[in-house]
Image (cartoon, rainbow, N blue to C red; front, side):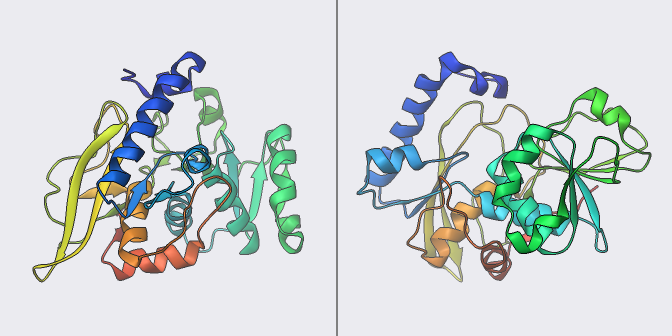
Length: 275
């Protein structure tokens, strides 16, 4: 059973992990769960089980929304580095459409992302090995890359795992997350689970009325979010169920970013105050 997030990148662990995920999805579907938060693309399971009653939600749209809302107002240039994930792509596209210049330092990643940017905003995505914006949007960054950052640089992570802080003269934001509403009960612990599985089944009550039941599934190896704060990926599954949306968010599908952000705020979730 994988216990470290590094193990999830190992080729020989994929079959076991996929079996665990598949078992969790089927179990949730049998229990009548409305929506299931899934870290990563769940398209494989939709193809295998096309008649699933539950909706699979990878949460990429809300994670991207949280990243966008975390960028200081007035920012006109950011550096995008690290793994080119679904969240990274959604964030870059949204920034370019807002007229914010997105600088990439990896040529291969730049050429992979360029075709996904709408033609009207394509000029805002640039490749440069020398530009050093003071806001970095990162899916992962090495110690060497961090040392090249200018003094006062803001690091905003794109993934569920926090960045290693090696610069005392820079600011590091937490992973994409939101404060949960007071009406969400039975959530008393920090967000931490050592391996992929059904972690718990919770009920959202408002004025003693049950609005929604949902199941959580995730993998973490240490506490890095405070109590009553949830990762954006997990919140997305809750919001999806509360709204009664009848669509999946997995594979290449991304829910409208402003739509899911507005829905999350309407249900009482709030952007986590950054350090």
